[in-house]
Figure 1 (cartoon, rainbow, N blue to C red):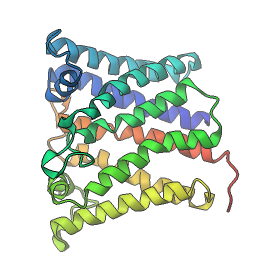
Figure 2 (figure 1 turned 45 degrees about the vertical axis):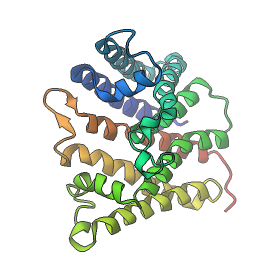
Figure 3 (figure 1 turned 180 degrees about the horizontal axis):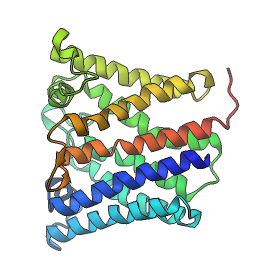
Figure 4 (figure 1 turned 180 degrees about the vertical axis):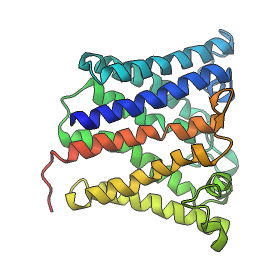
Amino acid sequence: MKPLHLSLSLLLLSLSTLLLGLSILLLGPHKHIALTTDFYLISSLIPATIFNFIAASAFIMSAILAFLAIKKATLRPILGYLLIAISLVPLGSLFSESMWITSMGGFPVIGSGQGVIKYFALLSIGLLLVKTTFTPLQTAWISIFPVLVVLLWIGGMKFTLLEAQGIESLVKTSPFMGWLYKFLSLQTTSNIIGIYDLVAVLLLVVAMYYRKLLIPAILISGMVFVVTQSFLVTFTGSLSSETILSTTGHFLIKDLWFLVCLFFYYSALKQVPSKA
């Protein structure tokens, strides 16, 4: 990976995990951590405040390591192992029925798990920091897998009324998409967003082999996560003067991890000969 791309990746990682860690610490015990501890049947072992402190500390430590690792390469594998550990805990809870919408048939109709599947990005980043001997093509697939999962899964959910209603409060505040509601119905607007996500998935896969599509694929998919970050400013429920981020803000800030994945993806594919 090019030094500039790696530095930007580590900086984004440091920023996102620092904000998450500090806000979790300030927010105190909340349902997202409780869902995970309930799944592992450990909620009654120690007070919820301790679980909250452990989670916050893990993110803050990740932020410190990521920042220091910009200059100190020896810290990158340590950071990688920590990110893997952080990601595996919530990802395991995907086996809980609480992550799926039972009224719509359960799996794969995802509910609370939408925030959890974003940890696939942290897992991929951790793997790539720990093991630097992957081939460029392997690196590209590992880095892009979380992006494909989220765009395909959550993008597919956009075609349901439940998701269309769920994103309305966010989308209507966006200068990029809010205007769509003036001309289109709630469901049609959501469908268009879903189609956009699926187009981004297609481009990312095809660009693996036809390099002329690499830049369009990066720009189109990257815009999804950039727009998500804009909700931190436009949606009043994202930020808090008391806790920095709300739980909605937690959901949004995690999309910075996917931009990191795209940096890895781009750098890896630049080293692979194109078929066209």
